[in-house]
Length: 318
Image (cartoon, rainbow, N blue to C red; front, side):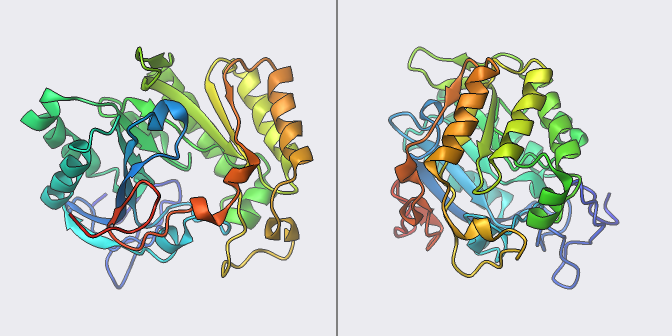
């Protein structure tokens, strides 16, 4: 592995240097202990069982192995806005979040650092500050993960909330240059479910263990959403917490493929309702929906500094 990066399903083999960055954009060599971090925040906009009343301790990593053309956080996933931190620097930053009383540690788009995060998490868990107030660790990803990476994180992650984005190969190719997305993500999600088959909430309704499957319904593609739901139902995952999102917001400056002009508009109520109703008809028992007002750029963090406030705006680094 040290000769080239094979962490993600793209297996690009890059040395992850400035001259040879990974497909994810990463320039931090394998096993280097370095991370590029876009922002940290007390995130109050996740699902209620994740954000709760005191927020989720979100660490947004720069770069992304999937790189959807419609990404709502393109400034960090595509442009890799952020700063490079050592393992020790990131641990101290995480404990600053921890001290704010957040409900969990939420690692957002961290898959391209899966080689070094088990060591970082172990150091955190061995710290007296964590032992005095342990909280769940969340692996917040695109779902585009190798089964090997998921298994390697099994003893370090409590909650898996992967995206499940595309069923159709051509759609995945057009929007993320990943025609293998469904075959990869479906196996990763089944593995996550095998590791955490039961959703466990505490007395305050905050998630402690389990799988939460997220799906962003895209304009013009609600039928593809229904095909994903068919797959989950066929594999008896009707009792997982299913988060169906309508928050898609067209992003300025991102090149959309001409074959998908629908992505230049927001989702309609009709499209979203079709997916919600289909999930209920299939017997999904835990479905979370969104208010249409969430489809607003105001809910996209501005990533203007390393530290963001709960409204997603930059604040002085503390």
